Amino acid sequence: MFQVYELKEKAERFEEAVHLFWSQWGSNENFHFYYDCMLHSMTTDSQLPRFYIALENDSIIGTYALLRNDLISRQDLFPWLACLYVVPEYRGEHRGAKLLEHALHETRKKGHEYLYLCTDLEGYYEKYGWSLLSDGFIFNGEKTKIYAASTAKNTYPLENVVIQSIKEFPEHRDSFINYISEAWPGVKDIAINQMEQSLTTSNGLPLTLLMFRNERIIGFYQLNEQEYLVRKDLSPWIGPLFIDKSERGQALGALLLQHGRKTAGQLGYDKVYLTTDHIGYYEKYGFREIGISQFEWGRPSKIYEHYSIM
Image: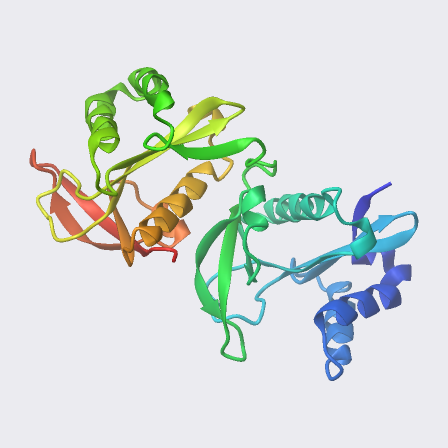
């Protein structure tokens, strides 16, 4: 039976655990670094660091750690997931996903809203709700990708979730009109107009991207060349962006933001922009405020930017 334990709960497996962590993540020169760090993690009153082992058939078949910092330049972010590992012969049955779920649960218990990791691996963590936050640098100067995940609801939010463009799948047109009319009538006219333009233009923008779970629309965003702002020197813009109330708390909005940044990058844009009155949400995903403009009807609104994902 697959079970995950904090290492201090299985102190009798300490030597075995140290050798497994070190053999997978260490070098010939730093065995004592792992030994000392893991030893003190079992006696400290501090919440971090913590090391975890997964047992199955009385063998250690997986590991992960929660750290203050994973030897990376972003010292302003914490805690960090590190040393995620599943023994090769036990892979392929979602044990890695179970370790990720356990890590988010443990992080939430410690009072943190987000968990971070750094990796060069692409396409794995996204499947379980992790979003690319930015680039960072490890201690030797090499660039690496930083991912973040919300601890609010440690499920598998991307299970049976797909994102499709109405331009590529025009059969979704009527479904989107019905959806936006019911879910967000306040932006219905603008969103439908931008969607119709995407079906007739030969240009790359605008685009309407729908998020489906089990063939049901659960959210969307639009990528437009211009916003309805007085300022016209920036492009492209993400907006509107929407997630069903019943689906919130699973980092699906973060997934749409990431998708928008990737789409902008594929179209050749270096940056992507959005305008909002929300404070504190977009900053969590690497967007930064760059100024204030006004909508064409006079209301002021903040402008945020982020780098596209190439």
